[in-house]
Structures are given as C-alpha cells and as structure tokens.
Length: 587
Image 1 (spheres, helix red, strand yellow):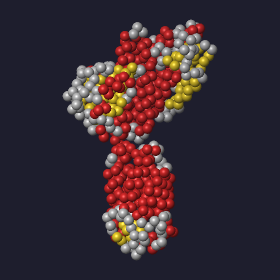
Image 2 (image 1 turned 60 degrees about the horizontal axis):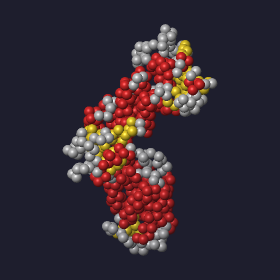
Image 3 (image 1 turned 135 degrees about the vertical axis):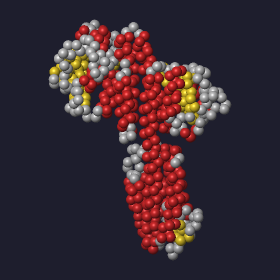
Image 4 (image 1 turned 60 degrees about the vertical axis):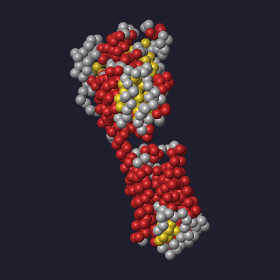
C-alpha cells in the first residue's frame, strides 16, 4: 500500500506540475470563472485532456492486487483496474467551471476509462464520474468574484468526498468489489485529495498575485491622474503632451506612449521614437481611423497599426479618442512591442485614462474660454473646480482601493461624473435638474465615503428631472451645508433637500440641523463676499448674484438660521424648455 501511495503521488505530481505551468498562462487565468459559453467549452476541453492524461498515466492493478507500473496505459486487461488521478481532474473541473463543465469532463473521463478496458464491467465509471463532476460544481456556489476561489482546505474535503463516492461505486458494481477497495481506497483518497488542495492552492496563489497587481495598478493610475492634471489643464498642446507621456510611461508597463492632435504627433516616448517624431504628421492609419470614427481601436499586429515605417517595432496598440463634448480633438496611443502583452486589463486601463484625460483637457479648455466670454464672472464660477475636493477624492479612493476595489472603481466613475457635470455647467447658463442631480449625487457619494456615517442626506424631489435651473444651484447649497453647518460634530448631521413646484415657481430648499450662522454674518450672506478659513467665502455671494442676474430679485437667496439649524430657500421661474413658459420667466 505504501508503494502504491508513492506511485500515486508521482502521478498526481505530474498533474500538479502541468497545472502550475497552465496557470502561468494569462489566457487560462482569463477563463477562470468566466461565465460565457465559449469559456465553459474551452474549460471542458482543457480539463477533459487532464482527465484523459490521468487515465493514461494511471497504475494498472490486476485481480491479485499486483501493480504493473507502465509509463502510458493505452489499454488494460479485461479483469484489471487502474489507480489514477481522474477524479482529481473531474473535481477541479466542477469547482472551477461549475456543474455543467464538471459533468461533461466526467462524461469524457468515464467514457475514456471504458475505452481503456473492461467495457462491460467498467460501465459504472461513466455515471460515477458525471455525478462527481456535477456535485463538485454544486458544492461551490460563490463564483461572483473573479478572485474568490475555494480554499485549499475546502478543496481537500471535497476531494475526500468525491473519491469516497468513487470507492462506493467500485464497491457496489466492480467484480472485485471489497478486495480492490480495501487496497486502493486509502492511497487514492489521501493522494487525490491532497492533489485537489494543491491544485486549488496554485490557482489561488496566482489570482491573489494578480489581485495585488491590479491594486498596485489602480494606485498608480490615481498617482498618474494626480500628476497629469496640472499639465492637461493647460490644454492639449505639444508642451503639456510631452510631460504627460513621460508620466504615463512612468506609471504603466507600455513600451511606448503617444499623444496626437487631429493632424500631428504632439509627443511620443519609448519604442519607435526614431520615426514617431513630435511635430510630424500622423504616422499610422489606425490613428486617422480613430479620429474619423471617434471609437477606440485595438490593434493586435503591426499590419493593423499601419505604421508607414516597415521597421517599426510596435506590434500591438490601443488607440483611444480624446474628446471635448462630441468633438474628437486628438488621440491617446499606447503600444507594445510584443502582442501577448495586450490583455483586457490594459485595454480597460487605456479607456479609463482616456476618459480622465479628456475631462482634464476639457476642464482646462473651459477655464480658458471662461476668461474670454463677456460674462466672465459667471463663466469663471461655472468652470471652477475645487482642487481640494479633487485631491481629497483621490486620496479617499486611494485609501480604499486595497480593501474594496469595486467601491474604488465606482468612486472613480462618480469623480468622472462630477467633472463632466462641471464641464456642462461651464458651457451652459441653464441645465436640467437631472444633470444637476448627477453632479450632486457624485459629490455626496465621494464625501460620504470620505466621512462615513457623518451625514444623513435626504432628497424630496416633487418635480420632473427636465425642469431647468442654473448649474451648481443645489451643489453650492449642499456643499455649503456640509462644510460650514456642523463644525466638529461627527454624527446626527442631517441635510434635507426639497425641490417642488409652487404655481409658476420652482422652489428649492436646503435645510440642516447644524449650529446655525453667526447673527453678525447673517445679513451679509449672499450680499457681499466674506472671508472664510475653509475657502474663499464667495460661493453663496456668487450664486446669489448669478440668480438675480439671470432672473430677478425674487430669485435671490432667502436664509433663515438659528442655533437649531439653517434653511436656505431659492424660488426660480419654473420652465421645462428654454423659451417655453415666457410668462413665468418675466415674473
């Protein structure tokens, strides 16, 4: 029995080595827990090969329990049996691919075992293998996360259970029954269970390494966006682009990075810099295609890139459009010199970077335009982005990305929504309530993540989302409440936002249960700029002047405050479309 255990350990060791090599291949790792039919078919084929190999590398055992240690078992004698790692392959297939994959791999493994020998006596290997594959899949329900895999200890228990089921089938249906089971049961159960545990340990190790790599990559992206912001706010030009590509190259593993406008290369760093020269016209047909279509393009070979230099070393590329509004103003291009480096992770990274950079450029453009228009005062306010809020948001996201990557991703999207809303506000005199809510919701989610359980925010919206109001109207009032109303109080801080229609007016009220406004400041709020230790103190003043300038004196801020809290009310003309309700606009 000891000798059999050693031989079994050798066979299982071979399967483990193959698993180790397999998991190091990115293509296989992308298949793990992928729920598409194509992925399940590929997993079925892969683990069926494992199961067949386990059958063919098994140890032949005759009716007298004598071992025949052959290298490859293509066929066996009618009355002989095989000790192998087939159930290990079937169990792991079920754990990773689910019951359907496990069942199909079990079917292939069982049929192949019958083909090897004893077609009449060994019929039970088919239903036993199918049952084991299905049970392994049903025992593992948690496939929602890419990085959650059954623990090695649970794998060991499942291995014992599945091998025990196989022994029960042999005991009930094999001609040699108990004589065979008492000899092979302990070695097979022990070694195959350990093999299942080790197999899952290898997968878990690689996936956790990949998880850590993604966390580091997310942190690098946050650092990258932090460093590129000052340059892109200068606009898209040769000087800013050359600084940005250096930063991107520093924080990513791309072999080359380029930024272009619609006609020329603005900056290029890395492989191919001998002919992708800043100032030259676009070198690749791929870039021209992206500018024309406005869609991201992926190139998996040099022919798809379309570089005019036949010796160009670039073999794979991601080219994404940089937009302001609906206009493509240039491209961000990231290259590899080896095709296999291009994975979905890099593609998603490029898409995310392009979105952030486009917003940064647009912010810069909005600020420049705001200085040129006649109503510079209003536009400057609309284009204003609080740098403290941006960096606080980045720091908050950076702090939680290692413990909750999905939440970090959600907050990045909300930060993007916040910037996009600022861009809309910088170009429009009025926006819809739905657009205003998008910005307010993004701001609140970022602030409430930064200060969990500090604020209780409630919305009472009684009007349609397409009613018009000036941009930042609610945003300024909510931000003012969160910053100034509660002092050092850590909880029970309530803010109630009420939006309703009262005849031909849109009524907006933001009420808090804070400490109230100092009596000496109350008459001045909204009527003159005030100095504040937490900011410029001009937010309410600018908002009030904007409302009066756009509408009338009836639209001015109405502020009521005591030591029990503050209410700020605004009454605006109610209208759904520009120019639609002229009567209410003139009131």
